[in-house]
Length: 355
Image (cartoon, rainbow, N blue to C red; front, top):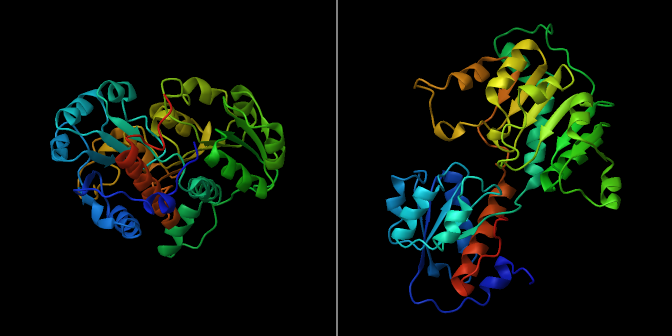
């Protein structure tokens, strides 16, 4: 079926007797701005009643959705069976994720409880790819260390030696939209790219991007840089672990802008200590839900693994911000509202997660 756009869909908005109420969890100011802006673009914005809460969805905050047929959540909200059961009991019929990942939702439980799930399959894949490459470049040229030195009046160059990107081998795990943009950027540097994915691109498309598919062990053995762009599921959880790291080329730069659970963080710490991994650029962390998007600058961080990662000079950790561009936020709001509109008018969601 041809996918409707927000513009075409809202040009035929039916008369709705009462506003459709939506509660958006884990709201930041940039979320509110992007959604408020997009709602104003609708033909009948008064038909949507959107409320925001800074709280994450949890078994305790689920009660806040009482009186709402639809809620919107983000990557670290709790979509477990226990929470979904509470939502069903208070009448929630639709959950829309404003992100591409949906590993935090129990899809089987949602189906059992007759709760429809929608998500944003693509918003700005180049934003995440660009952030991944930025982490590589910062690690390679020690930009974070150089910045601190110069600000403190230290203009020495010792310890800041990097390497030319041209001619290096990059392993890209995942050749979906984000992976493809990542490949384009690395190819622009003159890098050789080896990629892995269960679902392979057509040969013509692959040749146009200029990369080769290879087995994981071959990528580990040859890559100077490894960038991960895979979904998190039971098959990929901790795919980067002590055993697979040992197979990697010594001195590799490892970057993860996908999901924290793809990497065994303790194994990564050991590899950073030994020099097996020369640097790690992380936009995600497997236990990030407690800390990311919150201010702990005046509070004790109890996660020892996170504290060690933050203390290493060859680690750059950002707080799940790879997606955070104006274009991405606009696209997320637009697709989320399309999913809501489709459910309002047909009882079905446009973008349904694959099970």
